[in-house]
Length: 192
Image 1 (cartoon, rainbow, N blue to C red):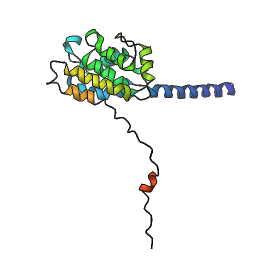
Image 2 (image 1 turned 90 degrees about the vertical axis):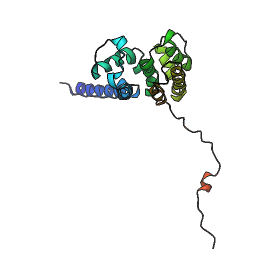
Image 3 (image 1 turned 180 degrees about the vertical axis):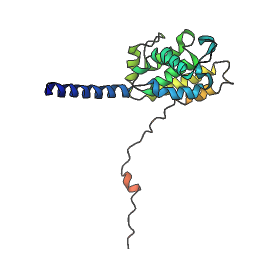
């Protein structure tokens, strides 16, 4: 075998592997979200029996449903920020699209997209253009809290509020530059 071809092939495989690692690990991932989802859902893994039938689902079956019918359907892997994907898709898993797709439209409104209730790749690209994820996440958490307050079972389902609040991102504190900051912390020797 030609040594140049072997070296070229190895180099190509190395470069391709590097590119895959960069692009695959930098975006949102259902595998990163799944433990959090299962912690919230508890018994039954969040499978709503009136929709999915009166059977006991295994953990693997439940995760397949959540991945296929929610994460993939709402383009979870296309979000660059994990928390943005999670706060949006978690609400759809927990509450559905809502009447007239209001829960999707609320997300579209926050990111400045056309409010048509159909999340598109263009909408996700718009969400990905935000510099700070908290500019999307925190307003959507606020929306979720308002939404839950409108539900008739809100008082007995306080876990809905705890679940939504778990996504809040604390903004970085604004630090104003001060002059001579060091002089406040320098201890000078006493004069003799």
